[in-house]
Image: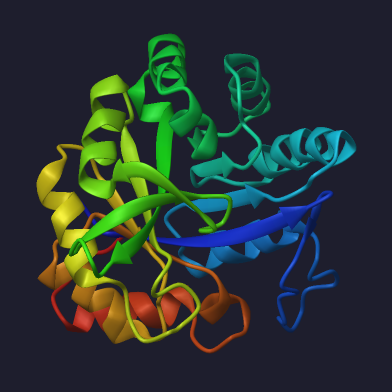
Length: 252
């Protein structure tokens, strides 16, 4: 049985981590490389860096961050944000990232998924999906631009299309739950998990260790992502993993 994965997510802007993380013993809480090392030591299975820089300079800085992180880390890490072309993928992966995550650019041109998968292998290509529930239609739709713009795609259909094009993993964020800290969207996660053959990472809504147990055990999701609850010391990767072990969830 594959171990379930716990994945911290860091937002990076112009080479600095935003949502300043309050950890004792870190000389510089804004340094992505230091934080990555901290999470590695804590027992994180992987990391996700989301580059939210708007500028070209910020994007170039991200390549340096990737290079330094790759030198300092043993665990795999994914980089998302601003990856729009095969050349963008090459730059990030050759700098040492294990995977790239694409979102809006894949929706605008689904062939980008196939181009990346053909060149690097499906294991390097993560498609991130921002989902929001539509009560009138009783289903979830895909949104872009941080959950502001609704697309024509239903989440299930887009997840299946992404996998058909070559996505090796789906990073699924519930925009309804994101930041609420009252648990992952279990119905959404189960619907997508049942619809695709690749691993699904649940994201949005983590508030405590029990929320991780629900999505990893009850829904049998492959991995779960968290940002703020790990950054603000409400809990730790180690605490979550101990809780999961006590509840018979297989973790590394």
